[in-house]
Image 1 (cartoon, rainbow, N blue to C red):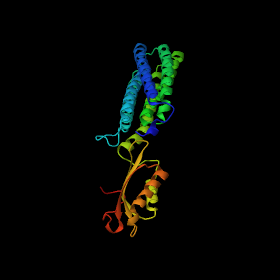
Image 2: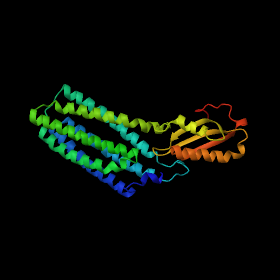
Image 3: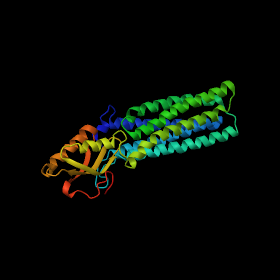
Image 4: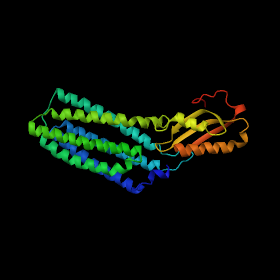
Length: 304
């Protein structure tokens, strides 16, 4: 991975320790909520416990991916291991979607067949969960700004903090008004939020993994800048993708104008400099062709 991934205030070892602490406190909270939910008969509390357990798994994945992604490129992985963090993020968002669907299913069953709930137990455990989830979200917040992998883990924890507030409200409704339906209805709300959040975040991860062009850069503009370089007669067979969330790459055939072949190396250097300066594209592979012997098929986004 590029050094720029780590030049923020939290160093690598400190970041790993933060994730380790987050795993530990979430595991303790999960066990407490699960036992409390079973004793109190609260589906919302059990739902929150399952969501917290998904946080434990998410954080374990995130920590493992962080460690693997720091490996240097080798003969087997010539681009390096940075995409491991994208895979971890994809797994985490997928588990969130599955969990959200499961919670919605269980909530509908409980709405159709309500069961008694001990609101007092729900309130106290929800307060404890809110404190732990808020602390865990703070532990991972700074790292979330630099890594989609840690962002997925952070969003797990942020969702849990909001879910704990929802469970707390359900418990208060039960204690104050005896409204047992508040428990499954709050669970539906938790489920809807998890699904909305996951669906919004999983798209960019999939885009990178299937080699989509960087969404924040206008591909057509990149090509126009390349074509606007003195000595360039055409650009075709272009492929534009992201190596990881921080590094964009391009490969293309560049046709050199008639009479300019002696300056081909200088023209290529100019194109690469413009790609780096204007679009922060540091990985550019350009195949040069003279105008008289250019490819017969000059489709812009095609070719091998």
